[in-house]
Image 1 (cartoon, rainbow, N blue to C red):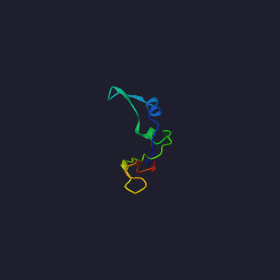
Image 2 (spheres, one colour):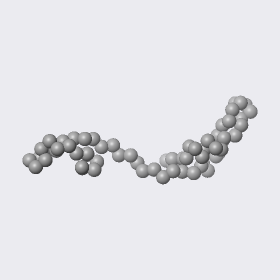
Image 3 (cartoon, rainbow, N blue to C red):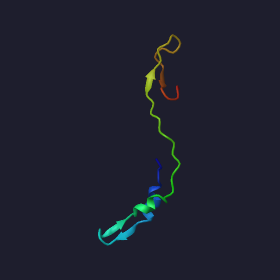
Image 4 (cartoon, rainbow, N blue to C red):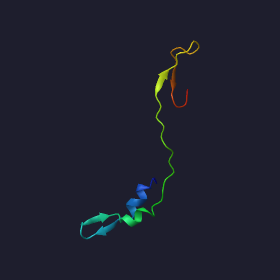
Length: 64
């Protein structure tokens, strides 16, 4: 999967006489610049149940 730059895609619109509006030609999508994006990880807040950390909240992703 490639994440494209939507703002750059909007700049490449052309007029379609049959649709009477500006559209993005499908061929241009392959040439669009991509953006750098990292996957999003969703953690949950939970509590630790140990003798030392009884009831302390922490994140399940970063453990803080």
